[in-house]
Amino acid sequence: QVQLVESGGGSVQAGGSLRLSCVVSGYVSSSGSMAWFRQASEKGREGVAAIDSDGNISYADSVKGRFTISKDNAKNTLYLQMNSLKPEDTAMYYCAAEDGPTMVVASLPPPPPWQYNYWGQGTQVTVSS
Image 1 (cartoon, rainbow, N blue to C red):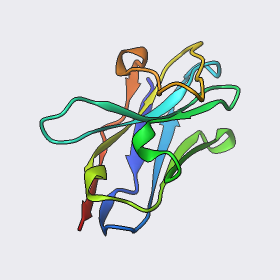
Image 2 (cartoon, helix red, strand yellow):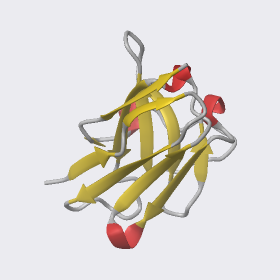
Image 3 (cartoon, one colour):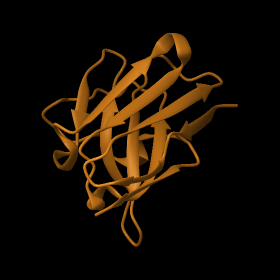
Image 4 (spheres, helix red, strand yellow):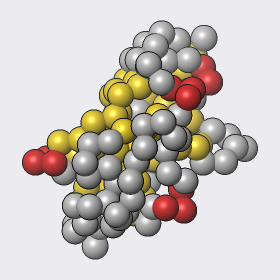
């Protein structure tokens, strides 16, 4: 059984930083991509960043230059470093994985939510002005 467990959320002031982690247990194909999504109140789930098995990365325009996605295959862990946080970054953040093979293209937004079949429970990020 695949499990994704996020951590690292919290409350920060605008301009602050947080680092989210997502530990994956169980078997997920190494050819699959992983991603971070977020969902603010009364809004749909938005792709924030994604990384595929070749290390290709894409970001939502709203976070480019501020957020960095990375993964440590040895630790089965996905990260999201979030700097220069803004109040509009406030949301529940979810980690997602899929068996692939899905290519991530840097010039395109992250793949849509329906592309992913494994999800974490989410971690709340709240940014105050």
